[in-house]
Length: 413
Image (cartoon, rainbow, N blue to C red; front, side, top):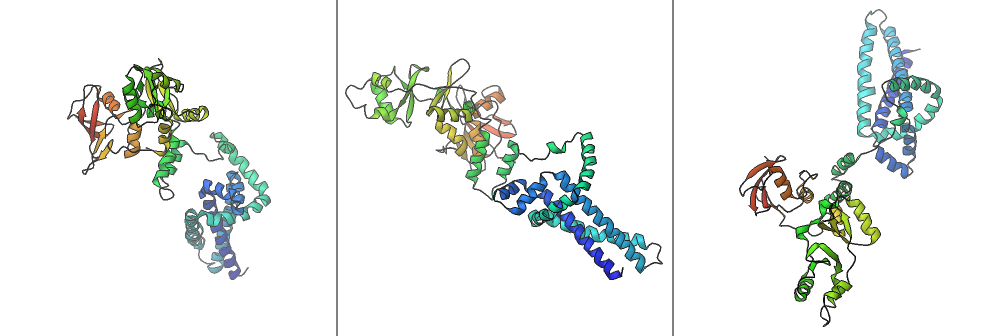
């Protein structure tokens, strides 16, 4: 062969080597979820690529088989060229090998692989059209190579067939959503995060605690009950006798507002319009309770402990707030100061505090900030006490005999 033909063959081998190296990186760097999306859109290149990636062992076997053949052939051609040009030089083969190594590293390895890693679809989809028929032609050789490869992998405990598919766990999905700031508004991110948190949240985490339940006590005078009905900010109220543990039902205020001006309006009228109370175990997951509210067409229930005592109240709005956030924001609960500190009502729930401030206070134990502080201190701290709790520095601003009322969180340094 003439030197011009040999140089032409060498150039062709370098181009093929660059193609095989780049296509390998591009196919392995593809975003699998975007690929599935394009397959659903009937993108022909994506369909071919997904079919190849269903057996990555075969695909890699084919690519590396071709790439090694091309690289070895290029080395042989380079040796022939070197001998033809400098037959009398004893070290010419070593020099040619060194030059070829540098050229292939730059032109046929690093450059195409870098491009493929940055823009994988640019090369992956066209390459899939080439590899599909090529795999059919070279399948016997690829199968023979993969036979030994798979046997070696099984020796180290890896089964190729069981490790083909990508899957995401909940924490990985959270990371993807948190990194999608440029793709969606922050409020949608919070909604998606709220949905993912439903599985780990129970009604105990979001309920209105027992001491904050507002209801109608039938032991009170009828005049006081009428006043409470007229001024209540709530649509539904529990009705009980003396104690919330003796609840007899829930009343929808719209049903009786038109009746309170009648002369015969009395406590029995209220009883006649009561809905049957619904009781919810405190360990019930939020997503299960949401399904139950929908199935039974109810919007409110009482949370009870293992002894049957009422611990709190939960509504459909409370469940929805786990997804969409506070429907009505209480600006007084968390107040950011000019120095970067926060004045926080200690009755706020830990989950809501974390949601507002993006902190990571533990939610497995006590449900409120007050409960978390008391558990941490093992006492009710005095006003002015400063503590470092779970890597947060805070100061007790206000308390009463039974609980902490107001806390100042100092800015992190």
